[in-house]
Image (tube, rainbow, N blue to C red; front, side):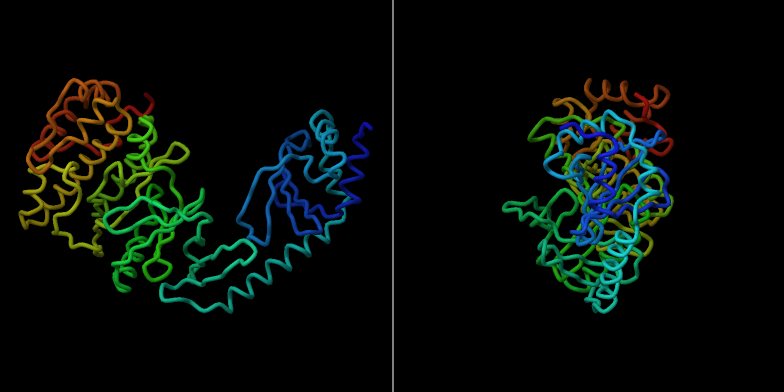
Length: 403
């Protein structure tokens, strides 16, 4: 049996009877009686180009790609898909002729019910409203101020999760990560949430919050850079660090200092590197550790920078913190983007015992390939002694992003 355009049109409009227009003329929404919602994208000629499935039961959050034929009857799926791909289906005509009431009623009722339940849910100690979806075994946390996007528990437990100095990954999926910090106090956790709120203005910082006592939920920013290099010898393009370098300059303008940039504290997803593990960040409003305290990772600092941070002079400390962040970011970028020899040299750097990096041919080659020619010598001198030779400009202005 060969399906015609008219038969497909008839099947969509009579079987489901639930198309809904949107404010966007390039898409319409189809709602099935079982409360499955399909968002259909339309090109300039009115052809259906793709369909994305959404489910109101999952708080309108979960999306998965599906073939166009999936919203047709199973017996005709294969042939219907071929017809849809080959023929010009006038989606605008379908929208105009369909009864939209079912879709509108279904979506509005589901959303009204959700809003009502959320309004009646009490806040926990961290200002989140906790709601559980029993059908999917997920727990959602909604910021009662509505200033931050919702967080949810990940789907998969991690038996031997990555562990930092304080936190351990316990669950993860493609969207969220759950961590445990058994040693933190309630007050300290609330202070970390305040710090996270302050850093939320920077896109290069992964969104995370304490949602329960000892429990952190975070947006999954991707794979840990150090892990990707160690296990798979994977190299990343320098362009991946553009956002992080731009944000670093903006942070320094606000007297915000990261203090612990390193490959273990950066992740990468969709070609963009982001910061995680913000335990040592300091801002004018404070932080988990005092501004004057020397903290961080030994191979990401130098003896000279440590002495400046111990000076007791606030302005000298600020300059050392700024150079320290830039030095650590450069080291991290070289580790992530350079060859195995350069990565090895980065990890072998003994910051406590040296004033800077012992410049090798690998460092010069990397600077030649990735630093603007007029700044190459500045960067090499900075790496050799960041205290004596600070960078002449913010790091993002010195790099060949179009390399």
